[in-house]
Length: 76
Image (cartoon, rainbow, N blue to C red; front, side, top):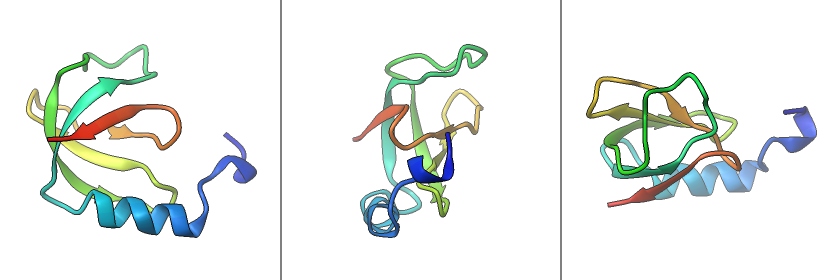
């Protein structure tokens, strides 16, 4: 991912509003071959960073972030 691929400041602000800490989410898909996470796994958002990665404390114990434009999650 290059700098030009990062989401705009407005998009990041929208993500932070849409996924505040404490929001429950479900994984739809993740492009991470070494992760044990699978579609349907659920977790709680801890924060959204300044490039739009949504960090989740997954119920299974993982704390991987969902990368904007690559991975897919949905609010519960």
